[in-house]
Length: 204
Image (cartoon, rainbow, N blue to C red; front, side):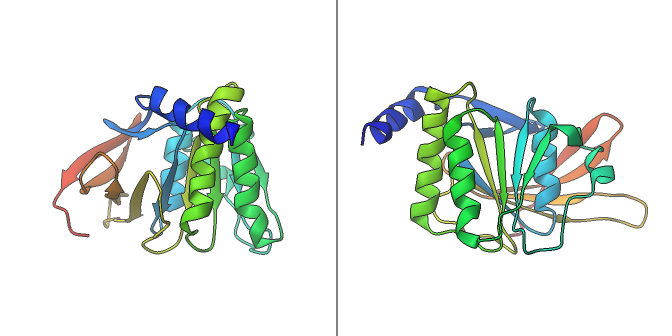
């Protein structure tokens, strides 16, 4: 009970803390956000590249898919990442919650096979807020979910998918849901130093 009360107070106090990631787009810290779409991992890597410090990346141990270190270097130093691959589905969010609560890691990513329900997401928010009090970071939690996502209670939901041309690499990014911002869409293209963000008509 005490931890929950302290966490709620912390969130109000730190509600202005944001992490920028593309152009003027930002994510509130001490909260959990959802990235979906077939380029969700790319978007998470873009966020990691804008942050400093270690990253915990949690993914199912029963799946063969793993991040390609060579491709990761385009976004962030792979040496910053700790990969955790539990073999039980219930451990995915439990590990994320514990790492957020520690406050020792600024970015915690959980690549999960399906969107979680409301109660686990609420626990992740509270864990991140507790971590900001008891740890050394204001942690950011990212849930990576397939398709159009649908996790209940997340602070925001973003969809990113490949939008490549014959001679150009790019992605279509949409903010599907946010507590304080309207839905919007952009095209993201890589540049020599970073990425270019171009507004586009909302289509989702």
